Every structure is written in C-alpha cells, then in structure tokens.
Amino acid sequence: MPRISNLFFKAAIIFLIVGIGIGLHMSISQNHNVIGAHAHINLLGWVTSALFGGYYALNPAKAERRLAFIHFGVYTTGVVLMAVSLYFLLQGVTALEPVVALSSLIVFAGVLIFAWTVFSRDTETVTRKASLA
Image (cartoon, rainbow, N blue to C red; front, side, top):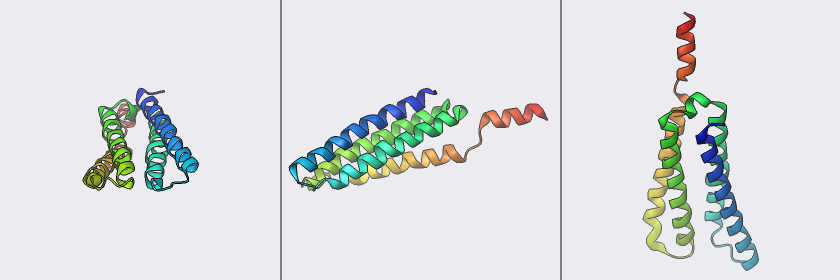
C-alpha cells in the first residue's frame, strides 16, 4: 500500500477514536452542545480521510506525487484545527470563531488539492500511451 494511503488511514482511525470519545462523553453527560464538532470530526476526519486513503491506494502513481503529501498535510492540519476550535466554540469560547473560519478555509484548500489530483492526468498512463505510439 502506498505510504500516503497508510498516513490517511492512520489519521482516519485517530479521528474515529476522538469522534467516538466525544460521542460517548455527550451520551454519558446528556449534554449534546458539541454535536457539531462530533459530526465534523467523524465526517471530515474519519470518513473523508479514509476515502482519500482508499483513492490513493487505488491510484499508486498519484500516491507517489509530492502533491499527495501536501494534500495530507494541508487537509489534516485543517481538520485538526477545525475540530479543536469548533469544539471549544460550541462550549462557549466565542473568541475561537475566527479560527474555525480559517480552519474551514484550510480544509477547503485540502479538498481543492484533492480535486486537482483526481482530475489531473496520471503520468503513468500518459507515459504508457506515449511508449505504445
């Protein structure tokens, strides 16, 4: 499996553990004020990171690109910042609202990098076609 897939899967598992932990805490305390953070951690952290890992596993030529590692760094940093700042914002720390906004833009940048990766040509396919000609 490509290294980048492994990184995305490991990050996804960490997000899953944190998301479940927050869910358990909400359930036990009967206080659901951070449900938005819980949902973002599970969807953007666990699910989306695992999907990214699966995509790179199925596209090893793209997984070897430097851009895949930039994607991981940007996206994961954005989700971590968003998860922490959103959690505390929902707990009443309103000063973190700009951090939530900034981290949302970082996550979006990570998604745009992934979109570029998906829609860009696979250099292996281009090379193979050129060698057949």
